[in-house]
Image 1 (cartoon, rainbow, N blue to C red):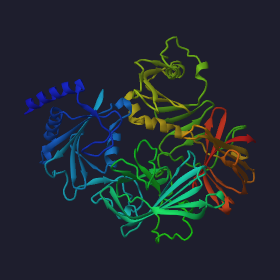
Image 2: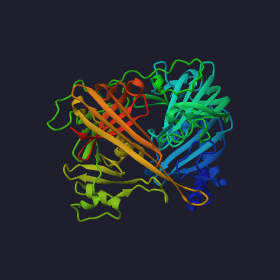
Image 3: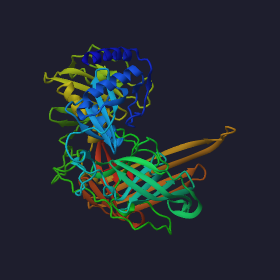
Image 4: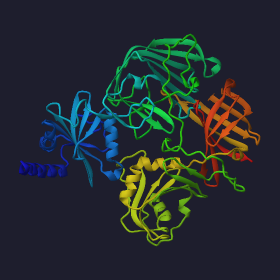
Length: 632
């Protein structure tokens, strides 16, 4: 038997090298898992037969045979792909993973379906085989099949827990919402969606779309039933209505009902999971067919969870979809409870620790120049970069500058293009490179191309060996240092994790830092042309200006001006607010805002070359202010 296997795999290896009859694949036919860009499926009979033999040699330990196999060739690890990403996509497809005594093999369970897989990362590719068994496997353990669930426990913890029951209705019972921009900025337009799941197995859905560029407001309502089975959620609508309303006073208010029509009733199966982002619990809904729904709209943009919708717990009623007059929702369920109060032991990785008392403010500077994060990282502000450290790992977030004017201290040049020139300028003066410089390999045609280089090196200042990487982006040049290449990728994992390191450029704000005037705003314009004649048809534009002034006694005043519409017939507005603000290191509460309401903002500084940017991000609104100081 073993000699037969060797013969088969020799032939398979030759066939793979020939790259014949390999077809691009985006979704696995067996598992419905979303596949990374560049994946190939090998449909040759010899290849699938060989894979089936390989899988069966291990699967027989569970008392089953493999009847048919799927053979996939995925990108290699140096493209950013890794096993963690594979496991994430498998779970998003609704499968539970059960390990075997061989780490390259494992079982997948989804309801009454079973698959056996083989996963192996080799230097130039990743081999992934799926096999279908001829019966129910005898899996390790007794009693009900155990799997890892990400459903919140009664304490609303999202840490993974081994359970013997699949998620039930109670895991999602309550109200969840999401909001997204319609015109590139939520100041100009938004679409807000809201689910309420009831304990009787029914659900209610609302969506509202507002945009300054359109004359109407669109409101959608839907009712139906839902079923949770394993990590799958099935929605079956019973009614769907789309209403078009005029704008009252040309503002974000319902005016007159102009039209009502039946909406598309989309029965949809989602893979569900719960994740904490910062201190907020999210319900992730991923359609198993990989397609967007008219109900939920456009997918979120988190590359770690592709083809996914992100719903949150509304902290207050002001987060909910505003309903037209006369629309009455079904009696609502209690909202899912929010997470426990943050502290150093339970706070998520990207939550900064609170200081018990602020340090004394340096002369002419800012109160806080160090942030101690709960995941062990430490951020330190510097004139031309932010240094982020944890143990033997260092990350330098270099601010943009004119790299063409800088010169390297080395005679040796690796600079074949402008991006590699930055490697020469930043790395060579401080490190002796002792291995070939490896660039990230992008597809032949890429929109968001990744510019990344790495190599083994010796640090000149300390004489220590290390592995250094450089990621070049529009806003930062990210320099990463680890003891070895293995340590490097174990810590930073992939390009998404590397890019996420820019989120550590956050520093707390004291009242004394805020005193003065701060200003921000922006503008956008769009030209129109007749589709039939090509004649110019005018321009629409939006311009906004926001100004805040904070006083030493804690009072504030803000002025918000704007204009929008077709040039020559623009609508304008001006709003002014004032009151006594309440401060903490990471939060500011401003009273007397729109319609007399109080708004709470997350507040922090981002360090930039020559100063700091003040960020105010609404906790109970979609407002996001980026401000610069214009007067002390």
